[in-house]
Image 1 (tube, rainbow, N blue to C red):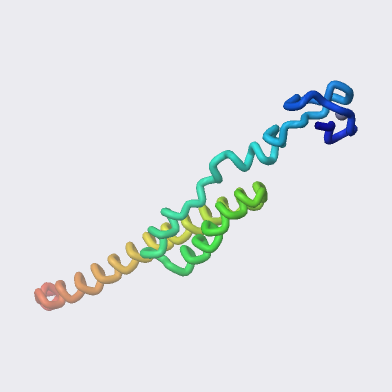
Image 2 (tube, helix red, strand yellow):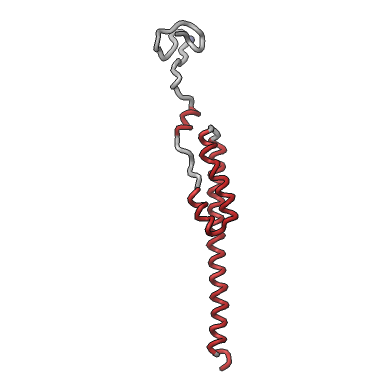
Length: 128
Ligand SMILES: [Zn+2]
């Protein structure tokens, strides 16, 4: 076999060229390949699915970002994958918080309406 770098002859199965020192083994990983072996960043899919029930428009945006994280990571777009993961996290948080706040406001609204009718119905105001 011959060196991939300089072309000089190497002993069969040798990992490094004795002349130029270049690695001959295909399984020697570049730093980027090594990173691809790591698990992708948290895509916050669960958070956005919960968000769907609370405030779906924001959660849909979050899910679109979340769905791309794993593919981007596997394709080697590590920075993009992290960017999409943080956007998914942001929209997941927004959908959950907007959802919770709207539910609280709706509950307060009904408490106010029914409370008012209850007071009127009880005749409490007519005694004043
Ligand atoms: Zn060589």
